Image (cartoon, rainbow, N blue to C red; front, side, top):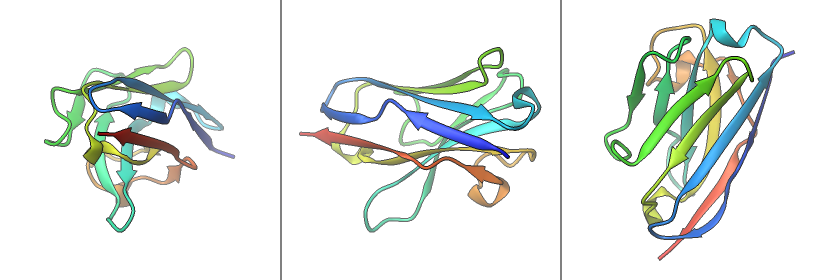
Length: 123
């Protein structure tokens, strides 16, 4: 059974940094791409960042490009999202997900999801 467990969320002030982690189990981690998505209240879930199986390629939503960095450690079965210069509009529940497809920016391509971790940014 595939499990994805996010951690690292919290309440921070605007301009601060947070690092989210997502620990995976139940499948060969290095065989699957990983992504981070977020959903704010009243809004649809949106793509934040994705990383290929090897970690060699990364993709970002325009809204986070230059501020967020996705990375993975295949030895630890963990994917990270380093978030810097946080803004109030970054506040959301952040989810990690795994996919065997190449369409990293599309949530429909992901087959397993974590339970989410809340990020709150005060202005």
